[in-house]
Image (cartoon, rainbow, N blue to C red; front, side, top):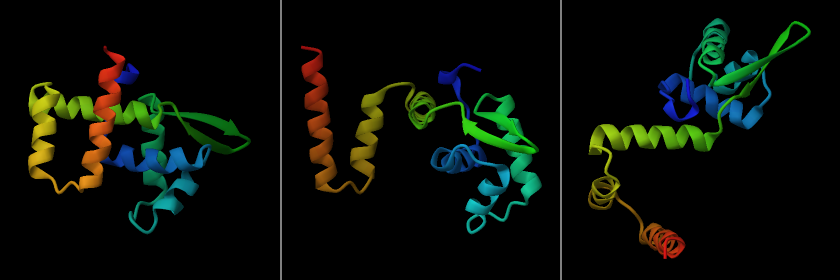
Length: 128
């Protein structure tokens, strides 16, 4: 699977969030970190993480009899893929309708608008 063609399940996002913070880490560490929000058994977490290795989302290193997992993708790669998939599905690949939808339907504080306007100004300068 190419890095730009990610198709992450919610459970994979959940695990990646922990691994990005703690890497390298073991399945028991991930299970413990998620214990308050998820009631996943160790075997469930281990199985999901092993599947994520096969999907090239995680890499595993065997240290004695312990598997240590690290991410094979960056958070930015995952976010970019997720946003691209959403824009493609919900807005036929067009960014402007997506932004219009967000502006008209989300409760965005004025400080966020200021930041967005500045980002757009900076980006426009690069193309002049």
